[in-house]
Length: 433
Image (cartoon, rainbow, N blue to C red; front, side, top):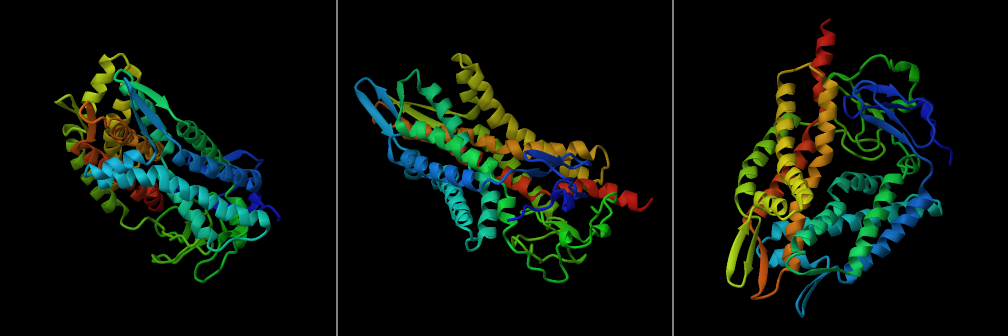
């Protein structure tokens, strides 16, 4: 099939709404927005064969990772073995079904969905046809990719192993090796696949009053004009990047190619983001006050908060682990909330100061927020390994629920915020000149 002509392709920046015409591009090159610096498009070679091979390899590694023992802890002559699912089951039995479900989704179900989705989409493409609902499946895969957190779980494993090393011998199982390989292979599959392999094979169903701008006369688009203001009817699909023309008062149209909702601005973005941030700020305090784990050993019970865990690693000589936990679990959630409060206030006040930096700040906080899940995963691994009857037991504390809530809610807040709002004040000012 003929490759799309990128030299004639028009695209809207997801960061600021700027409409631009892509230049002729070589493979493995990236086009960025000249106004806000956000990534517009990455030109990749055909990836059907490579993606399909990596997807089947990932499926094999996923099965092995869930069949064989993952970790074992040996104290004297006693050995405690765990599988990937063990910590999730223990959390459920300890009265933490919310955290158990969160870990199950982010570590097992969503990675399996990514693998199955790749095979479902790319195997038919290899055979010469497009599978049913390909656009919708691929759109769901890309949206849920941020919630697939196996690499963060692996970091949690390393931290838990270091914490338990002075208590017992930690023995990695075959599943821990295949799980690490699975992370590498699946990440390679998702990062190297070319979305155009899919989008170019899906027909665009025109439906007036909307239409694909890329099918119209390019001379109608003035690339020196911003076309970002709220009154514009040029809308770029956030899923497949198709540029469409919508009525000014439209709120209910979907992309003619991938069926994603089209919106000039995300509906009620500011109010929803405010509500989520306030909820996260309320949960942040009990998340750091209440214990995240409760340890019982030989009749003695001790409770550890996030900060006490940082202090433990700091004074036990593992200062690098202490820094990782402090940054990921304390500083990142707090800094993320402060930044989003700042962005919301600047949008409400219609600030025109340094919109490029504010857009870049949004993208950074959106990307790093998911790494705060590391403490939740450390708790999962500890409750799966340390179940030694009267010798030692670790259970999840109430702080774990509050902390998981902070991480999830801040991630939802990042999704609800529309960075194009940062540029609206500048557009309104330009209109009055």
